[in-house]
Length: 181
Image (cartoon, rainbow, N blue to C red):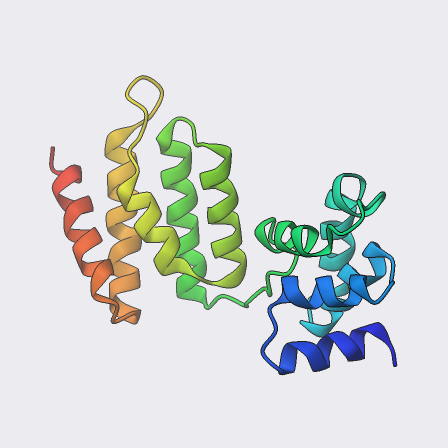
């Protein structure tokens, strides 16, 4: 049985991508083919698979430690290697553009926050991205608070029109009050 077929079957039984990777690796397969098989089973585009695996090959897949299959799978998942991209609607693309304006207006962003935003943009989880940006603040010396909050107000209004999640409304109210200061 091909690795991608085994990965697809394992995922269809409710296993996470990380657990699926670990299972394939524990069966004695090399790390790179295991990671590639999980990505293929998730229908991630081939160009994305190559880029994602190239980015982490030296650190995680080239020379695996014994009994590290589960840890490696979890790390691959946390890095976004197994994130399934979702096509954004035109409105969602405009929302992401406003988010990117807000990020620029922050005047600096922690790498972990930037990584999370990138993953949410890829997977289409714009609610999580909005809530995380609404909870953050622009840096006092290098940021542009007026641009930051106005960008988030515009993005929040667009999101609130298409998403019934009440947290968006609360965050939008917060952003509006910050924009008025």
